[in-house]
Length: 329
Ligand code: ATP
Image (cartoon, rainbow, N blue to C red; front, side, top):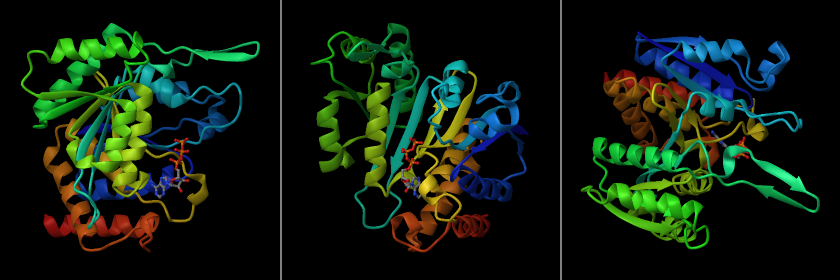
């Protein structure tokens, strides 16, 4: 039995999480869910955005499923998600992008994003009339993520890794990342290329089928993965994993989407696919495959969720997946 920490969050988080748990509960008895809170909900209850109770639960579970969180405007706010990623050293952000909708280009790529440094270290300062942000790139974190990408490619039969950076301008930071990539892949069988981030954005739009694994720094990974999600239907289709040495957290790429919260309009596909990634991580590959097969079958049958102009709401979509899983078993 695996213990899973469940953090629905707010906005559409609880809705997509309910849909996801419904699917998981109908799929297997091998998961025990323990619920926790972070963000504004946690602040109301415990006076902290990341309460100690949640940190304890994370430390005593095998993985975490997370929904979505609204960022409040309060100046003392420090993202509990960033704190979790940094505290638990979840250094690899993995974002698969696959075509599910009929009539779209055949895309099957995965974006692997360094998750701990770059411009996201939070070192920003005002200096009179200007502001400065620090971009940190270390040898240690770069080696760790390149090794992760190589290992991922081996395990998943991926053939080509594109290292995406901007070392022609950022010669020292991105330059170090690129140099480490070159060092590490020199004796590897996998095909490799280096692509500047602007060229990568262009190619993602003009010929996305050519990409297999994209390995990149934190900020570029954040931006490019939203772009890539747009190619396959939008944020409702983009799952992700944050993976560390001994723990992992799985969450949709999208945020809390307050504009559609509470309306049964959110597409839970990204959340459910994130749960499938968690099942792979927990070595429940067969169950993960059953989820993916059911989702593919439901879309292939012509079902359209509201985000892509259809009528199927969050709850109905979950019911369709459950039915499809039951058919397949
Ligand atoms: P954050 O800053 O919290 O990451 P964001 O600004 O990237 O959030 P999101 O909340 O991710 O914004 O979503 C942007 C828009 O995309 C939403 O307002 C919503 O209309 C749409 N959207 C996002 N996720 C979904 C989903 N699962 N289903 C349907 N529409 C979605």
